[in-house]
Image 1 (tube, helix red, strand yellow):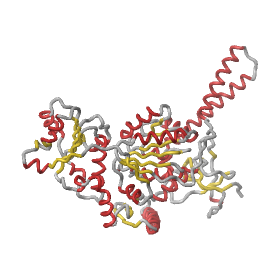
Image 2 (cartoon, rainbow, N blue to C red):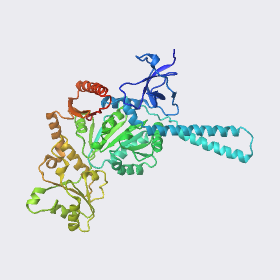
Image 3 (tube, rainbow, N blue to C red):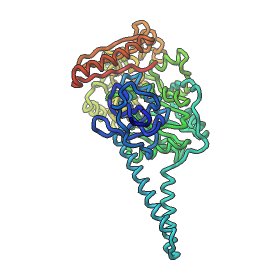
Length: 537
């Protein structure tokens, strides 16, 4: 009869159960082990230990070894993974795979191999120094020994005494709306960094965060790390080890940075919280990074700040109902000058897609001009600009290009066909249009012009008070944030479910998971099942 301790191990696989293994002794949750599953070797994470499995113990395999050279997964990380698995209807193995992809684990293992080699080299030098040598040889050996010891010390940093325990309850998230928010960000960062805590700043995409990163690097030299898909795995591992062991650091990252092994986390800032690119669509877990950041802050007892020129309706609803604290920066944004395309066309005030009013304002702007196009052809726009804006630097951008650019150098920004921002279909159309216009308006340091064929549309006619109206519409028609939407795709058969945010949601999610498992089993795993849950409110 085998002896030892039974442990449950999370593997980077889509499994609806957590496999059992036998270890030589009880292991702490988060410990990493090497195991065999389906004849393949994996690096797994211990999530449970000490209990008895409800299967024949003779069928339980022994682990290959405990991977002491790899840093354990923290309690907070495991808690975060469990939340993502439960809420977004995926397995915890899929979350583990997203948090620790193969390349990341390989980088950690390479680092561990480096450590082994350094220790072997140190042992050789120590043995040599135990013998008699000429002074010159001894000096060389001592210098080599000291250099190796310094490298080992750098790779095995020990947390200091400022280790911070998470609060029993995190403060309410702050929804920070309006214009330039950087002053408030810098103030909050100084507070947290000054206390030896870490700060995490989330941006929707790499390009969108470059301007903010530069501001932080100037304010906090030597403390800022940028984490995105462009950095090497070795660099990512170094940053991960630093924030696992030390405080007083600031990380600016995009979606995947949410899985870094944070410790002593004091502040999370989500810049442009309304941005649709915070949503991870494929593969699982299909999470909203903004909502995940709020939960991450709750787990660590950290303050969460959601910054936006114009908030998502979910966040606004949370502020109205008291879940979030609402604060306006007080920085005024430039006026939105509306030009009625239909009216201008009737009085011969249009030159192709550009109004004479717009061309006149651009010629007097006193600097470069950005024209954000909708359906217009760029060649036609460039031709008109060349003929009527001679000597004025003019750039033609799509909305996507504009949202990824720093527009602060332009003296005039114009949206040429605002109606292209909100097509008729989709209940989020008006909300998205408000957010797109606010994003452009926030970056404008001069004149902001909007051309539209619908000047009386509430988005333009009553811009600053449209949110209460949108919320009332959503309530009347039973749409988020008053309900939840779950999109499903069972082998090509797509369906959208609308559920109230109560116990029925939990029950329905459980039913969906069971249905997905049964469907994939029936099709032998050939049919793909995806389940996408609407943002949290």
